[in-house]
Length: 111
Image (cartoon, rainbow, N blue to C red; front, side):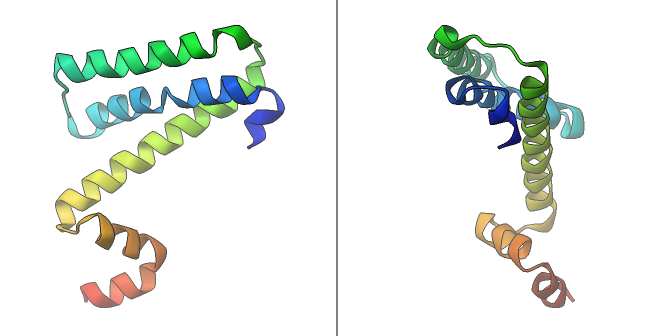
């Protein structure tokens, strides 16, 4: 919520819509995941629509933008890591959420 100090809520929402793009880039860098043109087009359309929705509120604060993009990057790394761990461990999404909430219990179960 630090970014809301320098960026308005509509612009914050607009910038957070770019998280999908960051996630796609991180997954490409970590595991070489490639997406079809239709998926890339769909994501581009979502981001374009978000920027149209936030166009009336174009206020620029470098610090606020930096914090939002840092949040996007960390979210993307988290999501890509969880996806990778899920594939290698064989856990479904509920198992991953349980292990994320109670890591000591998960380690005991795995042993």
